[in-house]
Image (cartoon, rainbow, N blue to C red; front, top):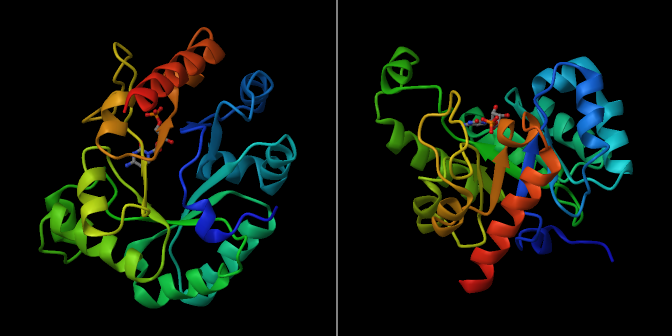
Length: 245
Ligand code: C5P
């Protein structure tokens, strides 16, 4: 059955998206070969895509993985439209662009993927690395929170499927939009895991309770002694929480 765009917005298992932040192909494949597409989805970012190219995406999708192509496109509308179409041709499950590219750019991206079976189209609002003072230097005088809300509305109005946001913001994103507007949340750490450079973390359960739909988790899985067992532990915690909800 062809999955329609609308149907894709229904949140399905697996909820974990493993961030494949590897610089080295051997390490990447040694992990991927152990993973089962039924247990996780995979995120490919700029580093890996720049070094390995579309062929990596094809190889992962051929293995049955849903791929989130996290390239955060931001350019003139025509170029972004072409870029998201190219991502769709690669068979990715989810692709993203910067909401700050403006309404015309968002509309062009949406129109390029309006076919019923396109990838989920997600917006990045304000990068978590940016603080108030950084916004001021680029001429944005509103608070980070106001800017996140403005860009969330812009993306929702353009018919986007969701946003990348902190799990702390997920509930307010749902309130501003619709419950089927997806929240994709990084900064998730299983109980007791190393925080690394993340600032305001939540456990998988806390994130789900706060209305996160998909959890982007990198190093707690990729750097674990036994990544598969770490992933399965997270999944059983998620399943236990969802079953009792
Ligand atoms: O290893 P870790 O779980 O911190 O990886 C999180 C992933 O989510 C990384 O790929 C990171 O670039 C991404 N990300 C993030 N915070 C954001 C947006 C994306 O950590 N605000």
